[in-house]
Length: 300
View (cartoon, rainbow, N blue to C red):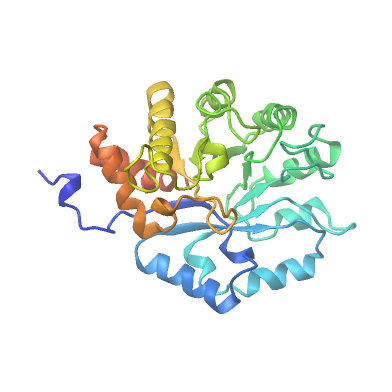
């Protein structure tokens, strides 16, 4: 039988639920396209997040998307923080080629409130959800991403969307509150609620959410970055023990946070994580599910 150790190094496919490469301030458009193409050539698929922290016109958003013609079609587009200039309707927003929409970021906007602010789902947010949860001409429904919501917005969005026939939910990049208390992490109650609605949860590698330092050794003389790697495994262990492995995915937050451990800061380095999971007794099929197939099977 083929074992995990017999797989060629760097051969693990990753379906990344959240990378900010397209809105990175540190890369040219050409470099961004090259990064995406290289990832696809290596067998990976990416959810390309278009993050907004200032209001944008519909035309400028369409131009931003067009810059990635030819590479976007092999991946999935998402919008992180729906933030448009006044006058852009929910119907126009829903017609954009994003498959996943995160209504808010860490702070509040006209639709909902993020984890560092107060407030909940607004009437404008409900109107937007109405449009996003209606199927298009091809029968495709948009997915609502709850990653940055505060608890009030989270529960109100879930409650409102659960009444929609075509609602689909996800939390693309987070960690486990029971392992590390942080406003960006999900509680067991939140995870159970999502799983009851058939959602997926993406584990992120941001050290603040994991609850570790960047690349300090676990002990004197240890391997640099081993503590961070162990914390990732701890979050995976907790999730799998309490909720099973079938709904757990990966949402790295590459290019969105500088606080990504060097042991896992590129897709080529996922070998170190798979090796650590293998040593913990995870079977190849479970690891491949978490890295790739669990999200691939969620898509229509």
